[in-house]
Amino acid sequence: MKHHQPKFSHSDVVELMQRLYWLTPSEIHSLPAYEDQNFYVAASEGGEYVLKILNSQDSKNPALIDVQTSAMSFLHQNGFPTQSALPNITGHFMTQEDKDCGYGCQKYLVRLFTYLPGTLISKVPLTPQLLYETGKMAAKMDRTLQEFEHPDLSVLQRENFIWSLSNTPLLEAYIYVLDGNPLQKVVKSVIHQYKTSVIPNRSNFRNCINHGDLNDLNILVQPHESGGHSISGILDFGDMNSGYFVYELAITIMYMMLEHQTPIEVGGLVLAGWESVFPLNESEKDCLYVLVLSRFCQSFVVAHYNVSQNPENEEYLMVTAKTAAHVFQQLLDHGKEKVEKVWFQTAAAQFSDSLVA
Image 1 (tube, rainbow, N blue to C red):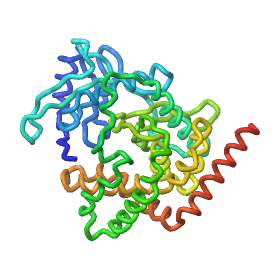
Image 2 (cartoon, helix red, strand yellow):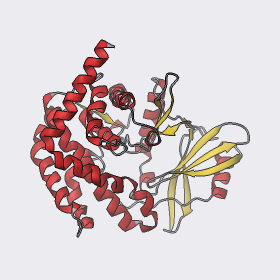
Image 3 (spheres, rainbow, N blue to C red):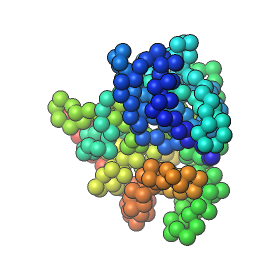
């Protein structure tokens, strides 16, 4: 989990753009990033781009990065609003750059992407229609990725990847970062629930490739002609991994809950959109609540751990964890039975409305 975040300057970006892509930046500004560096770049020659510089740890696995990059292009070709990587002057989609960012000389992978205009979904009202569309889009994306082929597809297994919901029990090795925090006891309880209720049911889950991080910073929207907003961009495939359909749904519900005034209701609206494409089976339904709680726990533990390693980046690393605590507590206070009742009844009502419409 130790990732050295790159620290490239604007002058470094100018040099990279000119040397690797024969483009001259006329405007550069930083974009949010968890462990990497992202830059918006407008070029004098025309065009808008995103230059992404990966952290040193992820840069050690170019095969995984190539699979992620290819998956984005595959989805784009199938009508999804994803970015496309652009080749450098040698025709490759990745370049390894050596630089000392304060940790000794490290290798950092550099890629250039098309820029997607839009507003973060967290900045607009999360209407029932937009939540429904988010669930539907997530299900369609995972179903489409069933057809994705790549010679290195096996790298998506990522057995020790801390953000995979399959690896929720791995949080136990890092839970010490919550010493003295009331959350620690609750996180331990959720991990126990995961072991006793999710693991015995996983053989009944339908497997797929997960985007793995459909959070409020990775979905862009634009105003719709008839009012409201529609999804215009899906960003950041860095957490892609082999998982299960229900994992993607749980992750999407968790992050959409963070941006809503009545978060418990959100699950039913996202679920309705999801099931319009891919209905859950009984085992998946029964585990959904614990899987959503598990994603909250991953967010808490990993954020606190990363802050202990990179205290200078605390504000960004804790952005989700800080907002999540009160929503997490609401889920716990309501309990599994009440939350599931809201979710499944809301989803059923939305399905009936769509039939009438």
